[in-house]
Image 1: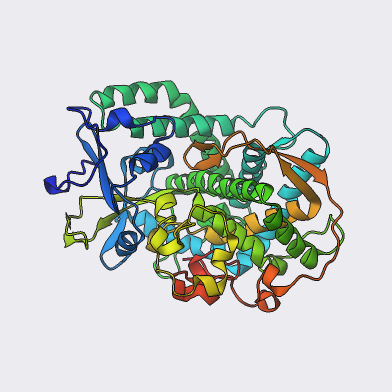
Image 2: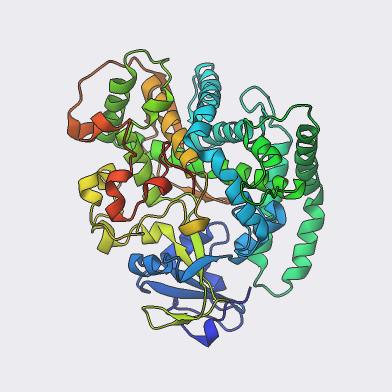
Length: 509
């Protein structure tokens, strides 16, 4: 866990103190945003020292692209991810690179994100979205966007992962699993943040003791569901749990044990709902504050879905929402909901900066800053502009300069799922409602496991869509072929791979 980089030093903020190092300048409630502020003027790579722990950060796009080279580098586990392992175990997100269960689970779960599997999930996503709309239609007050998007994505992932309905839109109080899961996650986050402090082990034991009942409840509920499904008379492979229970590895015949299946379910629950709900919330924020962009998005939706606000998009239509896809991409550029990843070298290597990096060293790529590198994204990199992702604008862009789903073989296996769901939900919202936010609202970001707008509300007014003829440059010049062509396939030269950019028609990695 110690990250000393052979004693090498990097630029760091002014004001470093003996013993505590740079800890006094950190905001414990918003560590990422405070790190971003402190990075000003420090260059593409810098460090923060917290007691005896060195955190090395990369924010330059060229250096981040170097770290994305899979022949030289692999995923590194920062203290935050190591702490999360105590909750999610050897799940896909938290496994070490040499964990045998990672490779097994990765291979077994590939079929869960093929086109055929996505077609099975599509009606589940539609049904959850309709429950959300029914709850909105029953009340006239503004809605808490982040809270409702989180309910929606939790229901979607729980139903597609292990066919369980948590009743988020029908219960007066949340299902007890949800607050228990959140409490267990927060306990892990606190332990991760304490890692470098003197006496961390004592404080960690106290946190474990206070939260043991939350972890026990989460584990026992999932273990019960797994046992019930394993003992069922007929094998059901319609969801992720069924695939993990009943599908052997095609070459070795190996299967996941029940403990690792629990770890994978927890991983999908945590990563699969937080990231997508954040992506939707940021997209809605930027749409609500720019009437021209909102009008273009609604025009595209009306053209595809027609005048009936209750029309649900078919599976094939989701890939046609080209402008909505660019809106989501641009929101994830500015505020990637999973905002960082760590990298370590496969063997000792020398970076282009001249620093020597060993396999035990790790560097954290801060995506909201890498995604704002003006040498890649222009002097207006802080501005929300979906047309950055038009094929002509993306062509020739530095490879690996856009990484909202991570990088390499450890990138998000569920990206097709997340983007299909997000585009589907966004299309239905904009087709069904006129949205309006508080004009005085200033974006405030909550740092949970992921990033999320805080205190962001919208008024949803029933809308009467109309069929319109839209210019090609409003909805994307390639609209006509959208159902056959992956949204990312035309910009592979910019470093985006069709199979890794979230296309519903792509195969999972």
